[in-house]
Picture 1 (cartoon, rainbow, N blue to C red):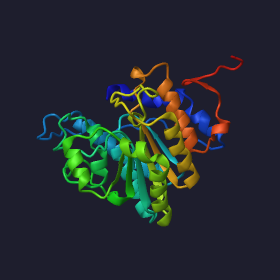
Picture 2 (picture 1 turned 90 degrees about the vertical axis):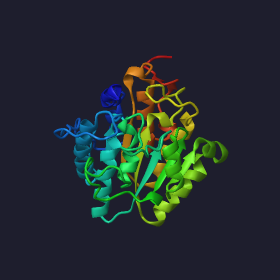
Picture 3 (picture 1 turned 135 degrees about the vertical axis):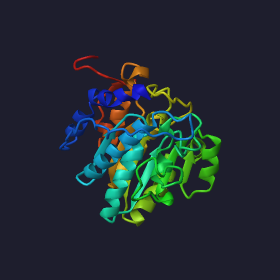
Length: 300
């Protein structure tokens, strides 16, 4: 989506680098990734949008993610969720070479399990998980997946918008899928604890993919795919705090921020706050906020 192109700039302006440095991290901003040259390519599904461009971005992002995830905690600022087709496959390749078991925590209202054949919207931010899992429907179009994700190593939380083909496919996978009803009934703690125990049992590492629409649009309006009934402020922060306590997160996607749809930067600031919680900022260290807006020095 075009508005998401401004997402990385908005996250930088909202203080992502400053927050990380304040936590004591040595931060290197590697700038924006440039896509590989786009090839002329068509698919029989005529609804598909921007296929050559998405493939070119996936190639570039996979290489960038492979390199960055071998050198520290890699943080990828998006952009729409098609970004994860590249980041997850690049991170998975690096983990395989290091002989580490990779797990993915997918925080999103959608599972993004469409293939090029099943998408009816044609929006390729709906395919990255299917692609990274090595599902059929991408061969001869997208780059080959060298290290497909393991289905049972994927945990999805916050699901509440699935198309019929995705719903049917999800029923036949070993993906751990928790919709908002599960969160309402059980809370995020037992669901996430179960996933983190699985990761710890296999001495695994975690890639977190956080879509803005995981959050309720009342607190995060800056997204083009708003779905009511998402995670609350505290649920989201609790997840980030528990992930930090696990000590196993090695890479993160922050995606689908559309500043054009945001309200005075509320969503960008919230995403940066969540990143800070993931990287170790505690509630008692949090600066006073006024419903999404930072206090100015000296203000009442």
